Length: 132
Image 1 (cartoon, rainbow, N blue to C red):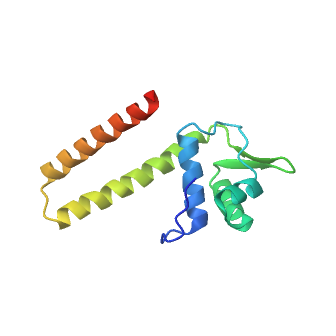
Image 2: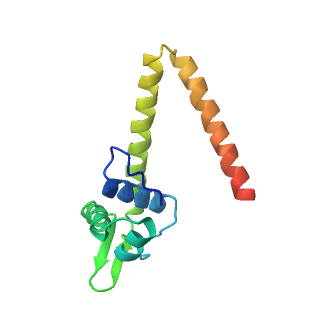
C-alpha cells in the first residue's frame, strides 16, 4: 500500500480506496480477514487511528464487517459494491481526463485514440509483469 502524504486526499481515504481496489482485484475475498489495524498502521507508518477511520468508512459502506475480538472481514456479496465503487472512481478519472483533453483543444477522436493507445499499452505492461 502506497500513501502519498502530499496528496490533497486525506490519508484515511487513500487507505480505504486502496483496500477497496484490493478487494476488487481479488486480493481479499469474501469473508477473508483484513490485516489488523495495528499491523497495517505499522506497515504503512501511519497512526492506528487513521487506519481505524478507513476501516470505519468501509464498514459504513457495507464493504467489510467486524467480528468483535477477532477482526475485520470482507463482506460476502459485497465485492460487487467494491467493484461499483472502483468503477465510479474510474469514470470520474476518465471524465477528468476528457475535460483536460478538451481544455487542451484535443478533438473527441484524438482523445479516444489516446485512450485506446494508453489502454493497450497498460494491458501489455500488465501481461509482461505477469509473465516474469
